[in-house]
Each structure stands twice: as C-alpha cells, then as structure tokens.
Length: 406
Image 1 (cartoon, rainbow, N blue to C red):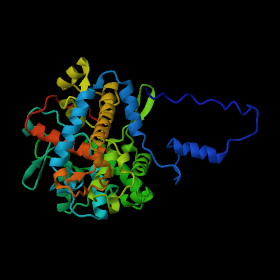
Image 2: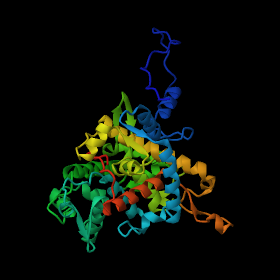
Image 3: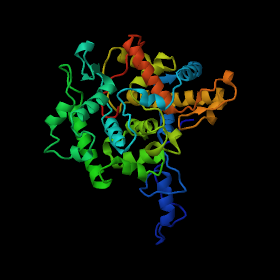
Image 4: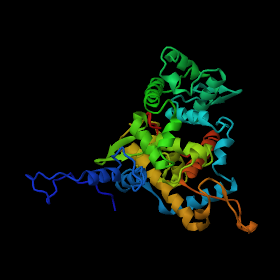
C-alpha cells in the first residue's frame, strides 16, 4: 500500500482551546527526534535517513517507471553469482589506482572533497575525443574518475586542494587556481564549474566554523552511525540536501551524502573512520548510471513517452516527476535485489558487514562468501555499466539531468 502523506496538523481535541496547559517539552522533543527534526542526539531513538521509506513511496506512486518482478529476481541471482566470482567486497574500492591508498585523516579530507563534487560529469559532446577529461599518469580519465584524477594531480602539484582552509581562502584559492585544478585535456570544460566552486566555498565555511576545519570531527559527532552521519551532513551542508517534492510529499534521495558514508566505509574497510554499526541503512545511490543498468537487466521498465525521451537524449528537469521516479524506483529495485539475495542465500546474513569473508569448513560450498548490502550492489552495478559503456554495449542511454545532486 502507498505510504500516506502526513495529515495536516490539528489541535489535540483533549486540550481545550482556551486552556493554559502547554505541551510536555520532553514529549515534543521525542516526537521531533522520531521525525528526524531534532538537532539533539538520543540514545533511545536510532537515527533513520528515511531514504528507503521515501523510495518505496515514490515507487508506489510512480506512473512512468515500473519494475518487472520476475526479471528483478533473476537479476538478483546473476548479480550475486558475479559478485562472488569477482570476490566483490570493500577491498575492491581500494584496488583502483586512483583511490587513496593511505588510511588517515588526510584520506577523510580527500573523500569528503571527492563526494562534495561528485556530480554531473556527463558530456553533451557526441564524439568521445572532444569530451571533458583529465590527463593524469599518462591516461585520460572521464566521468567520476576525472574528478579523482584532478584531485590527485593537484596534490602532486602541491596544491592543498583537500584542505577546507584553502577553499575559503579566496586570495590563494582563486577561481583561476581552481580552473587550473580542473583543467581539461580537451576544449570542453568541466561541467558546472561555478556550482562546484560554490559547493567548496560553502562547505569550507561550515567545516571551518563548526567542525574545526576537518570532516573527521563530523564523523566523531555521528557516534559510528551511518544514518546519523548522513543526517548530520544533510543538516549542516545545504549542497548535500538532496530533497524534493513528489506527489505532494517531501522525499529524501541523498545520493552524495550516502555515497560519502559508503566511501568512508569501503576505504577504511569498516574500521577506524569507516566503522559504522548501521551501515546497512545506507541505500543505493540514486544517479543516472544505476537506472540505466537496471533497465539493461530488464528490472526497470519505462513508459513509451519516457523511454523515447531518454533515447532521444533530451534533458529531464531535476525534480520533475520523471526524474524522481527514475531515482526513487532504482533505490527500491536495488533493495528488492538485496532482499532476494538474502532470501536465496541465508548464509549472507552471517557474513561480516566489514566486508570480510564468511569462513566455511566446506570448500565446495564456496568459502569465499561476502556480506551483501545496497552499497556493494551499487558499486558493482556502476562498475559493470561503465564496462558496457566502454564496449559500446549499452541497450539504452542514461537519462540526462544536469544538477548538483548526482
């Protein structure tokens, strides 16, 4: 059943309109905490992001995006088998040559900047050779990897690009310096340069004024709660507040805030700055690649008008019904895939949420069993879609939405 919108607040009939009685402040605060509206921490009320709940609401009310239950179940088994074959775990994150190999507070700053600017890399250029890319270590990097390469290149050039103190120092961190940091190997500039600079300036102010200039202090304030850290980030940093109105209800999608937590968890292998006791509360990260992959797998279906629009490479407005349905339904689809994997493979529940293997005395039973969650499924689907793109095996283009949210 669809989740109903909250009713319009009304006066408590048990309290007379002319009464001098006031609401119990403790009860009010408890209600605010339950609704995620309180800035106070409560040991009795575990933090919730509401992203999965909102995604189900979007799916239940979607008109132009639907799921194929049979194909979703089939895809779940395929994904699981492929992930096991590749021993897909948190370690896979660090295996990429561009991701940080150190595991310290400097790495935390690197990851924060990386996900602060992790949005909108797709190009309108039809020819690949003309698209924005970063030249680094003898290669040309596109998409998300162009951002990581640009950060690494800047650090190699002794530009303190990962320091929030630098972002707010407009005498030394000028727009021209930042243009140099993100300089392209082609004539096409990085998309949304002004918006990226604005995100850096605003986030730098918050970190320097409220968190001692380091995102590590935000992590400390979250008390090892993944959901708590997502809520803290979206509360304090406006450019992470990925929310919109759908069918009369405010919904949260929180792509970059969630992937920030996921990258910390994966980089630190569930330890140190990446230790979260509720990491499974993080959902898939609603962008434009995962819906494309889910459509390729036959899990997601589009109405004729939406599919024609996407195939024609026409832009879709950020916050429009089409865009929200694509993002929300993909979150819910990955959740159904995760549940199906756990249903078919109960041994998954016993695997460590830190990304380790589940030990087994029976080698024939495949001792190389890893835990599963929406994060790892998302990482796997994204990597697979990028491979298909390089091979020109995409069955449908990704949708085109230009925004800071993904």
